[in-house]
Amino acid sequence: MKNVYVAGVGMTNFGKSERLGRELALEAAISAIEDAGIEPKDIDATYVSSAFGIGENQVHVGPLINSALGIPDRPSLTIESACSGSSAAFHEAYVALSSGFYNIALVVGYEKLTMNSTPENTRLFAMASDFWYEGLNGVTFPGLYALMATAHMNKYGTSEEMLGSIAIKNHRNGFYNPKAHFRKIIDMDTYLKSPVVAYPLKLYDSCPFSDGAAAIILINEDAKIKKSELVKVLASVRSGSMAALQDRNDYTGIPGAKIASEKAYKYSKTSPEMISFAEVHDCFTIAEVMAMEDIGFFKKGDGGKASLEGITQFDGKKPVNPSGGLKAKGHPVSATGIAQIVEIYDQMLFRVDKNRQVSNPEIGLTHNVGATGGSVTINIFRRLK
Ligand SMILES: CC(C)(COP(=O)(O)OP(=O)(O)OC[C@H]1O[C@@H](n2cnc3c(N)ncnc32)[C@H](O)[C@@H]1OP(=O)(O)O)[C@@H](O)C(=O)NCCC(=O)NCCS
Image (tube, rainbow, N blue to C red; front, side, top):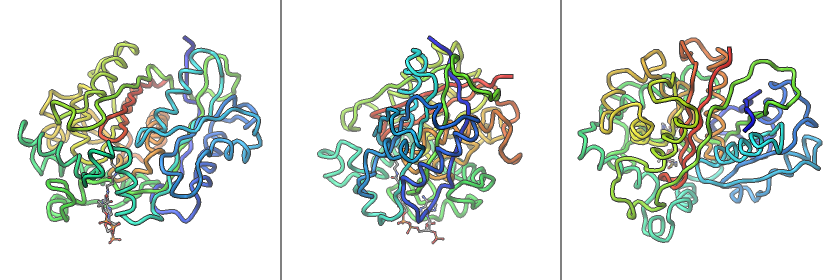
């Protein structure tokens, strides 16, 4: 297999935008191309992800991006994999580059959601669950994660304050991220008093519906480019879990995340102890608890406690979500997986605000989940000196 590297990244602001999703996607793509110091004509293939383009009457966005970049002849693939769509696109690009089939790929994720009301988005999102059993019977995504939260609380004693410490940390990190949806520091009192969305999950346990796009240029060792600031991909692994919660024996973790991370550690010859920092899928605070346990950062049941103790702060022993995570940076669904990689790259190049810069960003991990874990991608990256 050929070595694969991230050579440049781009990202729009996350939050509410008046622009079309395809325009956001193009802006992120152009930033990534400029950051990598290449020309659009250098790109061999484009991978794009969007889950809810249908809400904007626009699917099949790959050819639109390539046309706008002046490379309509290059192949494009438009992929949907719920909230992990652009990680799936990244994985497909990684496979093509590591095999040597292509040398330079553009990977873009974008979503446009804020033109819909919360009930409309909630229904749209339910289509990514097992709709005929879950969504149709009224179980929303906040509802599904609320089931996981109560199970975790009952089994391991995870408390509201533990979940609150995650919301507070991620809002704090988002405050120092100029591209974040929410740039608002909150305290425990604000968290505890926020309205309940689906018990025990409250407003500040939940990620928002965001607009935004993120893009990267991925290259293999045969690519001829001038840029020397590269981040090496040590592993990219996808897995899955039973799609519907009712088909699982246990709700306190995501089986596919455990499987994918164990494989990723094996392929990259790393271990949880060796990971310097991680961007994980905190669509709800309980999801960050489960993620940290599934990827082996903490013993099962200890994720919430570790957060309350401050271990996962940007300057703690195990920084998690220094970007602000989905909670505060925002969650434009299909942009999220690539946005996590943007953060890994920017952290490794020491180009984020010092108030959230990880001190020793040697090995970084991304954990991105589709729905309640029906699809999962784990990637591991190494900084090159
Ligand atoms: C939490 C949620 C129900 C809030 O929706 P809502 O009640 O319609 O909220 P609104 O959009 O009317 O916003 C009301 C206020 O709360 C803020 N807000 C909205 N969502 C927020 C969030 N997730 N966290 C913090 N503040 C939020 C808004 O900025 C607004 O503040 P303002 O009054 O100061 O302007 C909605 O964001 C949600 O369902 N999130 C989960 C999304 C999801 O399921 N994603 C998939 C994960 S798998």
